[in-house]
Length: 319
Image 1 (cartoon, rainbow, N blue to C red):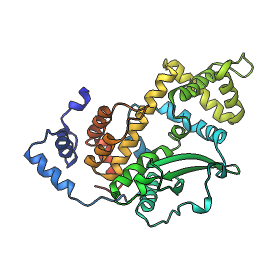
Image 2 (cartoon, rainbow, N blue to C red):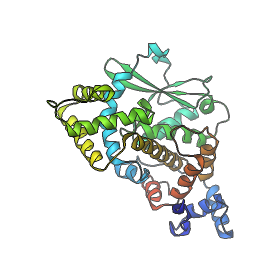
Image 3 (cartoon, helix red, strand yellow):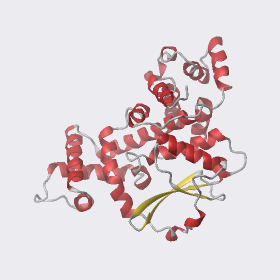
Image 4 (cartoon, rainbow, N blue to C red):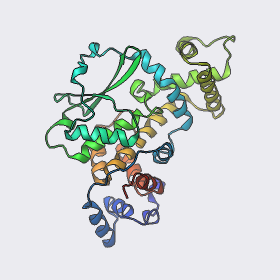
């Protein structure tokens, strides 16, 4: 945790260091004044969308770029293999939320997806659902249709706008191509198999003796489903991962943990409220593939005062 003991005063000449210090109960009187001033400012509104460059500055440094590239290539294939018809999931598409819906959660969804530069998911309101957001992988003909169901914690009475932004921003950060696979294969063992298959492709040619078992099936699936250039890209990534001595399941778990931190950072950017974001992170049940709550909170507090997140918020016109 030494990384989190750096002087936050040196990070940025604005309010965020003082806000972070006060959150950690380390603030001096001047910090308290600045933090209180910042707390009572109106919610800043993004004026433009995040570019790829800004996403790269926002994402956690331990989110492996090679795994991002690998998962971006294979995610559509994996999604197509597991997608279901709307009818099978009891979804009536006539009930889908309009992107122009004027309820607070509808406006929040449009705002977040526009700012994140991702296609809005087909969305349904489920007031009796206990989870704030549930994902479903649907297909219409040959077109994949990501689906969100919004539950009581998001659509119920009295939910604050910042809380809605937090819940939606965290999920919508995973709609980016490099993270979408989280919705399809959420466990490190599943993702580890994809990593192993990529490394196997990097070592073997189609005419060579092929791997057997589950990895063999996965390699065969990749060969059949991907185009030649995609297959070569996967093999090149696999060779790089092998050369780096990557252990597949451990790397997959680290990637899941890092992408979770990226999503929390994205939620903070949208709310602009460290206290609210931290409270919501601390209050939720511990996700099985995430770091402990204390480490997630430390990363949030530290990153809130970094030049990277300052640059992101400045790009969005929120500063």
